[in-house]
Image (cartoon, rainbow, N blue to C red; front, side):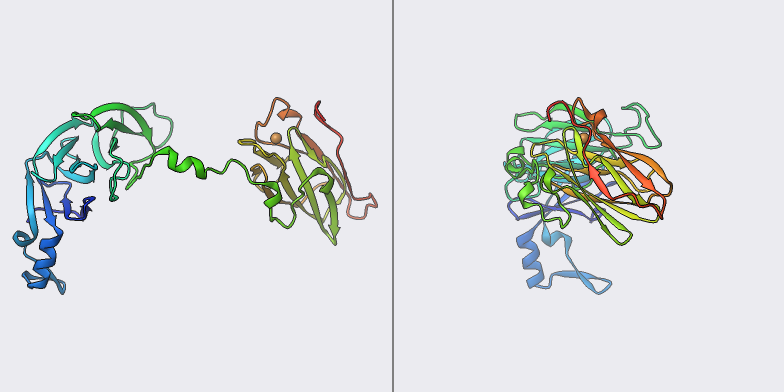
Length: 332
Ligand SMILES: [Cu+2]
């Protein structure tokens, strides 16, 4: 029995199970119906840790002989062909599930590991492309950090010969990657969250709902954000010893208009608030004075103006708590 390192793939018809091993020199193809027969007849050749082992010769449909070196992973198209990556000989080999003969091969230039035919591990592969995910592709892209980018390759498989279309960087070698036609994703795409469906308990669904509320030493700022201002953007009456919660609602109802929110010197990270969403940032001021807050996502030409101020008073101060909006953009 050839060396198999636990890589078994079932073909789209469910009849065949293809095994492979990184250091093997052939590809065994098992037949599901034969496995069922062997189990029924108890056609075994001993056991491994109590698990009965079926006779190799009884369950094999056949072997793909001398396909290349180091067959690793196999994917399938919709026309009865399999595509196996070869780690040692650095290639993809296309072979027929019927005849078990190789019919085409294409170099991948690097040590390929996983590969992906969109839908190739389902009953109905789309079967137009195969993607090679490579290992050890050290020299392909500029070194930009402690880890180098790997290089993947996209090939067409809908013609008589596999053809290289593109190579592109990946982080590591994606394992069991899956791809599917964009039309399946597009109708489900979320472009923005509907503001009227926002369930956040501290949402402000319009600038009129913006307010600043004190509960003991907790201050809740119901803040809205829209190109290119915050409401309120001038807050005072916050005292040293307060815990301030900024509940920032992004009023935008358009695609790709997130706003950021940060407070200068804050110990917490910034927020990135998607259109229609509310997010909360906690801030404990540690000094008296005026602290700027600002948008951190380039949202329009007036993004730099998207800022405001928070005045922090001494703990015993009598400054009234209030939030107003002072800086409007030209359109407001
Ligand atoms: Cu902004």
